Length: 273
Image 1 (cartoon, rainbow, N blue to C red):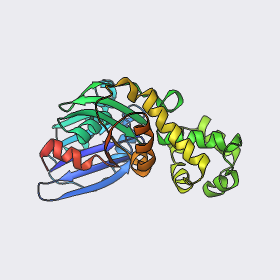
Image 2: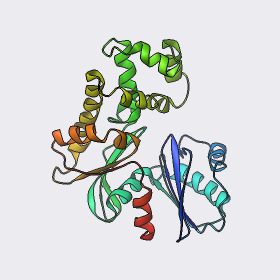
Image 3: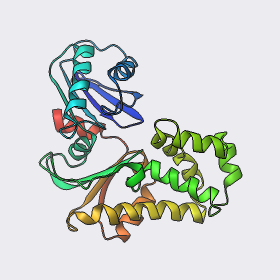
């Protein structure tokens, strides 16, 4: 049995295939940089038992050659859990590139809790514009959408304050505490994306989303060759597909595939299934 994992900061999708049958299981996200070995083990414990795992291909946030120590920590935990040494740990961006473009050429993007992008060819990343995280960058991401929503609501630009607070059982003090005093503020802010989607017909909300996607294009996609097509994956990309296409095409980009999960593309890349 082979396992492929696609992990963001919020959730991890595990794809198991024995050649005849493929199953998907979701656990909490694993970020090799942010999470300790104990936290990684806790996430792995959420998996059902798998018999006869022969290889693991893990693509995740905080992984890859940019984070060699964190990747090795995760590799050790995966080896101990699954009992195989045939394990590779790569970045979630490389997973997106291989899922979206296989061994072709194009611009691969992630729009989920965070955002990222790259120019890829033949299953490898050739160029990457640093995403910089939700404080300094991550344009178009769920965290930035949530951050801009909270900003607009409390500064009075988005007249949905009562609806927003009631929907999430929050108040001003609680929001400030969760953002500035607790870990994983990016996940907290990204959790407001469903509220944004539910109110997308409001002109202020629609413009908030379009502006964030236009920023993603102007700050990131503009650094890649204009003639190359763009494909994207992630929850934000999939759930706001129409506005995403509108915004990127207005910035002169040709958009091809938009999918929520890389599962099908990664299985095809690695095993031709």
